Length: 115
Length: 113
Image (cartoon, rainbow over the protein chains, first blue to last red):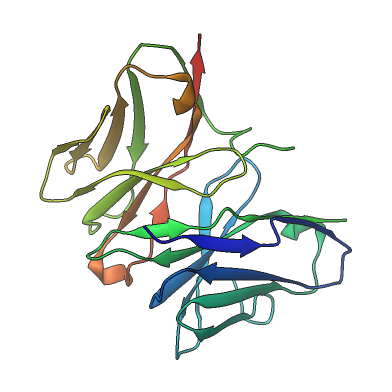
């Protein structure tokens, strides 16, 4: 099965700064997804990032705050902009890596702490 | 470090017993369901899936049951082992949602010796 490498694995950032998280898949994939997982909670989809088109954001998430790049079929980045302590969370990328409806692979996540 | 699942409902099971983890899903149009296991510091890992045209599916030591009438999903783990300790999430999707997964709230499984 596919492998997703996500980095950094963790970071501590100052409020007002931005952090870019990178997600690399070891095979070409059409669909990639970015999730946020707040401490002790479930995963919430931020956006869907398909190569060749603009990312599609879920309700409550906007491009100015979470710009996403998808330059090719194996790579995506998520930037958390103008960070505040409320952005402290785990951010995970995922890719549709299998056939049919199933087949989703997840990265190990980026644990972000904003101070 | 902080662990995922600190505030999630917890199920404590003795090693060797069977575990049953429940999930209520929200979208009656969902036609595909997946159970994930998430260990601390890792991303969700696929366990088993089931399509809406099925009521039951079995894997190695795991069984998923689907009750579409009440929109309920359960994961049964036989002979629970310490390595099964983790947070378990159900997820749902459908062809109409562009393959987006919606995750349930999660349950932390704690296996005691």
